Image (cartoon, rainbow, N blue to C red; front, top):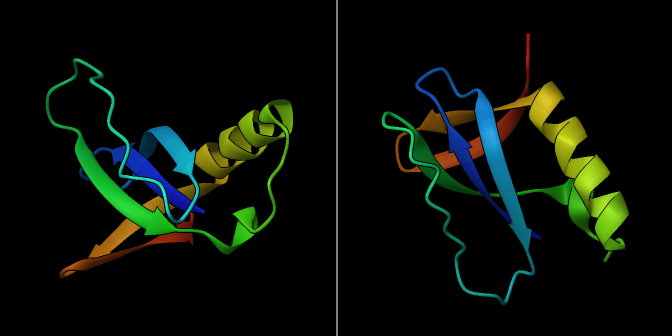
Length: 80
């Protein structure tokens, strides 16, 4: 699955959307200036969980991971 993550300058994720690899990019308007929107892939979401499981997994991802941007690429990394 691909993820659209909304994060601050330090990579702290404030919202995340999961979508199948073949789906178009997702977008939501959070109404908060200063947030960045970054597309990343996640190996943690290889199956098709039911909506409740997906929400739990995304919540866990938001609390344990951050976005790390290195030039034109971005990836998830563990919060330190």
